[in-house]
Image (cartoon, rainbow, N blue to C red; front, side):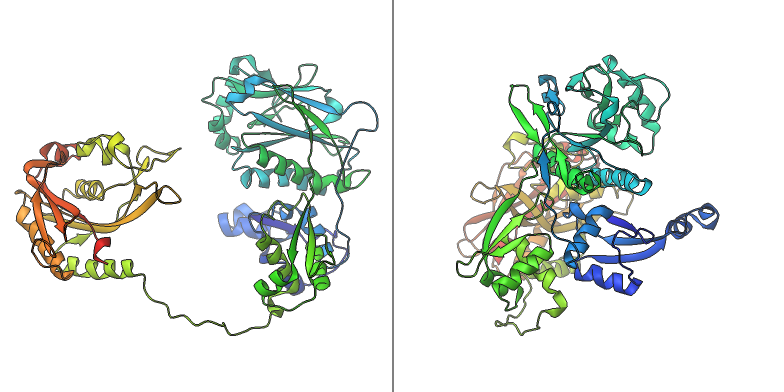
Length: 586
């Protein structure tokens, strides 16, 4: 994701030249991609006439790692750079109880289970907005929506002016016709059904409608007076919209993934709690689940990890003391100290660093703080000579000679429809060892192919106007279920060829098999050579099908395709085919 950094903002309290800022970003593990302006961007993309009147304010486009959500807004970036330059101590984020009364309460009803079951909430109390802070607040929500929230499908963020609504709040789900409210920036009330029609032409919101439009119930959040706060993940209510005058912000995140919701909420409150009357404090909110269980949010969880200085020194290729490494990590907002037990270092992971999962992530931050350019170049202790992967080498050799035999190579998708590998070939999908896609986008990509034949037949169907005969081949992987593998499936390299003409041309395909075996140095003989043996297969014409045996093992099949199979692929001429596994020949 891109972060736009406005040069006019003086949050760093330092003046950097463009070259110095570029170097600072590199030292911090980021890349300054471009220095530009709104006017220049519009001019480049849409022409000078469209750019007239656009802002000339200089923008810095910074390339931020996708898992560093804490750097997606100006507040987080500046805070990180100030800690990195030792101009600011690592802030301590605190969850506090309200000064008076009970914490705000969000009650989740069981109706949400079928559509969007999770929700978390928090309050930013006595916050002060300026136009720049407000813009950054809204922009961070949008960046998180596009990134960790996966375009609102996993999490949707709602922010509300707490002084315009009253708790406790209720998160439920209702029929679209029963939901009616005035949405953000509209002048009248709409039902949820009308809103879905209204936003179908909205360039921004239409991309999110598919998330709930097919559901019988739509999620909605009410306050104690029945005022609609939001209809996640589509739109907030106009009644509770925040403005520059807003002093207390109620933040709710509804989700299909609770872990992501907690991370998003933590990110929103930690980035902007510095503008509260008590900086870096967040007022807690209570969430009541349908089973009666209650949880307090935001979690703002700190955790501690221990690792050795030797591990970091070895992995990075440096030789620094435990105390120096702890200081390097602290500069990366990972408060660290030497425990005194050998070279052990205790590292505190703040709620802003959800990207720290493993000791390697901590080691990477130590390397960044040390400076990649400061690591001494050394010669590797081991020398290796690269070789082509044997299976790929065999594939390349075969491709050349099969093309020389007069066949044209095709390259098809590894995914196909269920009927391509089953019904069209005269087989049942339940009998295929196919890997199914759980959420296919189209009917053409439902399963991983278990055979190369459908792809070649579809290629012929798309090239029926070409002069006959059509002689095609493909050498690619198929995917088969395999319980012995850690992922439950394995790839298998196959060779497939088809001959399409006015006559079946079985002798052409048989001749190609003989040529292939000649190239693979396998002689035509039973036992240690290869031979073919009559077989029955619903894909092939009865009595015109044979299994290929090499050294007593079945490696493939060839024959004349059944007329029904040919018709199902919208072909009109006879066709012969050969398909075999080439891995046994390595």
